[in-house]
Image (cartoon, rainbow, N blue to C red; front, top):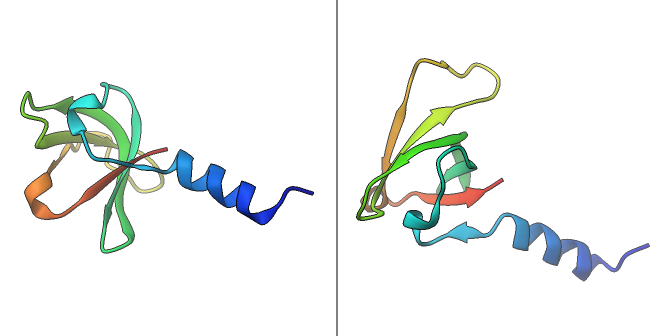
Length: 82
């Protein structure tokens, strides 16, 4: 059995917050988090050159495949890779 600290460290490392949105790649799976709640999940469609805006193609149960979501850093959201 693995030590609890080891399991927690791997989970935290895997779900680390992305501070430089410019490092995200098109097609990468991410979650959008606000106030410790996942408010959206899907694939990166595009990231602005400034790295302050991203477009997300939603995925998962109930997602509208035709809808694209726009998020801005100034809205106070965080991005996590999944």
